[in-house]
Image (tube, rainbow, N blue to C red):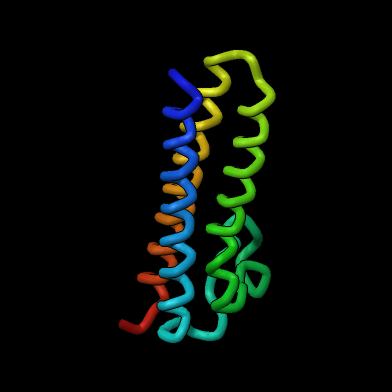
Length: 109
């Protein structure tokens, strides 16, 4: 694959992360003040975050996309370039799914 074709995965990931970030900001008004975001922590107060914390998965996916993009620029191995570009898109999709599921779980629509 050419680098320009790989960049399409990064652009798609950025667009998807941006849309999930905008979604989190829009539905923030319909969410309670605290939402369960950190499911890996023990039950209780440790799992809760503010409603603005719903933007964290999208922000995290932007960071992953940026790191992968920088790595692709310096790598010579085509397989690693493809794997990093596709994984960037997958991370952004999973972050979007997480954002939507949490919003529909605790939101008042």
